[in-house]
Length: 91
Image (cartoon, rainbow, N blue to C red; front, side):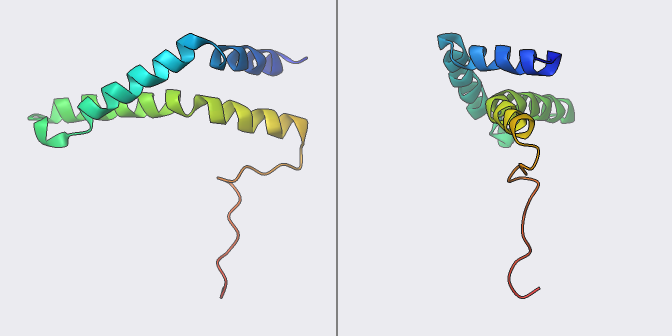
């Protein structure tokens, strides 16, 4: 098992823990507080809120990113949905 596979396996274990579910709930709660840009009064507050949302998005999408990478490692011909998008009909 490569170092990357060990790390991915450890992350999968994390996703199965009750703490992961609690963390996701807390992040979603915090997101709702930051979501209302009308409450922000300065540019610094706006940038801070944007940074918070970017980190929350990364953490909330970590599980699916790990799943995608594991699929890539198991099947080299696997193409993630986000990468592959066939051209619409008529092109």
